[in-house]
Structure formats: structure tokens, C-alpha cells
Amino acid sequence: MCGICGCSQPGKVNKLRPLNGQVHQHDHDHGHHHHDAERLVKVEQDLLSKNNAYAEQNRTYFRQHHIFTLNLVSSPGAGKTTLLVETIKALKDRFPIAVIEGDQQTEHDADRIRATGVPALQINTGRACHLDAHGIGHAIMELGVKANSLLAIENVGNLVCPSSFDLGEAHKVVVLSVTEGDDKPLKYPDMFHAADLMIINKTDLLPYVDFDVERCINYARQVNPGIQIIQLSSTKGDNFSAWTDWLEEHVKQEHQG
Ligand SMILES: Nc1nc2c(ncn2[C@@H]2O[C@H](COP(=O)(O)OP(=O)(O)O)[C@@H](O)[C@H]2O)c(=O)[nH]1
Ligand SMILES: [Mg+2]
Image (spheres, rainbow, N blue to C red):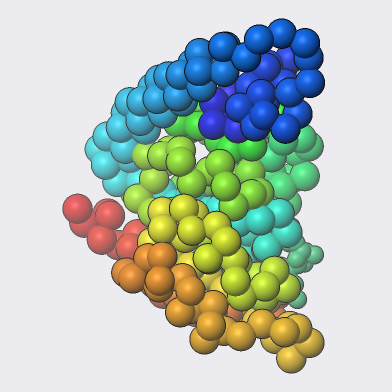
């Protein structure tokens, strides 16, 4: 459930929409607006604080078992699953890898991961636009994630809701493909602020699109001065080792920690 956008509250979305005034056309006095606004803020606070408590449980579990966990976020189609498939091919002999896939519908992405020989669990979120820490806690148990491993969580594709939901991961990694426009870090600052690493994917398409890499990096650093950046092509393999080196180094640190 997402109290922020009301996306998975069947029948309640319209009740929350009067906050926007414009779509509010029925015939009665409007004293209830304040109550709706207060209720929405309360629902949001409760939801996030519950989520944070579950996220802390997950984080403790990851720390105890030396599981290095990443939360991959992006728009739909930026290349998260492709990146993961190529990452698994490159690294699956170095350490155990498991994947949790989040999509509103279908098992497609988990099937793509399983084809590499790595365990994957698909969570279908229905109307919800993000994964939450409670669902991840159950998924970890169901998957039987091994100690001293890498756990990759592919979140539902969108650059808004997943930014607010801690899953207990070590880092959020935002994948931005060059076909999406170089201004996305400014348009969706919460996501780029929440991420520790930005992967600029599909660099093989740069000759064909109007995407200014330097401008994109400047925008990302405006909202998050400390963000790390790796440019690569998941399909052609250009600079892919910068990403696998980053991963190997972090997995090693987690295992030693
Ligand atoms: N040209 C190019 N296409 C890519 C690259 N990475 C992914 N794609 C394509 O982008 C599309 C969406 O990829 P997918 O991994 O399903 O994205 P997701 O929705 O973020 O998981 C697919 O057709 C991929 O083949 C890349 O580096 N270069
Ligand atoms: Mg995917």
C-alpha cells in the first residue's frame, strides 16, 4: 500500500483526490478538506514509520549474514533486468547471488533471472508502485538468501514512490538510460538524492539521441553532491567492468565487515 499516492487503496483514491480541489465536483460543504489532509499526513507518517521498522529488521539480518543488498530503481525500461542478467553472468562464479523482482504484474523478470541459474523471487505489487520492507522480509526467508552473498532487489519501475521506502538495502542504485532525457535528476530529485550510485545506461545509443552526459551529471550532483556515477552499456558491455569492479569491492567489504 502506498499512502503517499494512494495507489493501492481500492476505492479510496478518489476520496483522497479532493486535496487537489480541481476534481472535486460533488455538492456539499468543504469543511472536510482539512480532515482529509490531516488523515493523509497521518497515514503517510504511520506507513513510513512501520516500513522503517521492518527495514531495520532486514538491515540487521543482512549485516548478521554478510549479505550485500542493493535496491535498483529506475523508470520502466531503463535496463535494470538487462543490467542484472549481465552482472550475474559476469559474477555468479565469484559469490552467491539472489534476486528479488518487483513488478505490478507478471513473472517475466524473475524468469529472465532464473534463466541465468540464479534464484529469483517475483513480488507482484498489484496497484502499488513500489516494494516495501515487510514484503522484502518475507521474500528473504522464502528465497533462502545465502550468507556472504549479493542480493539485488529490482524495484517497480518508476522514479517517484520507491525513493521513500527503505528496504534495508546498503545502497539505492538509480539506473537512468540515455533515451530518457538528461534532465531527469532535476525532475525527480528525491530519487537521485536517495541513491548513492547513478548508472547511466545504454551509452551505445548516445550517437542517436540528444542526451548531454555532462549536463546530466551536473544535475545529479546538484541534488546529490556525493552521488557516484558509472556510464555503461549493458547490452554492448562498454565500461561494464567499472560496475562489476564496484560491486566486487563492496561485496568484499561486506564479507569482511
Ligand atoms: N541499446 C541498449 N538497449 C538496452 C540496454 N540495456 C537494456 N536495453 C534494452 O532496454 C529494454 C528494457 O530493458 P529491461 O532490462 O527490461 O528494463 P527494466 O524495465 O528497467 O528492467 C530492453 O529491450 C533491453 O534490451 C543498453 O545498454 N543498450
Ligand atoms: Mg525489469
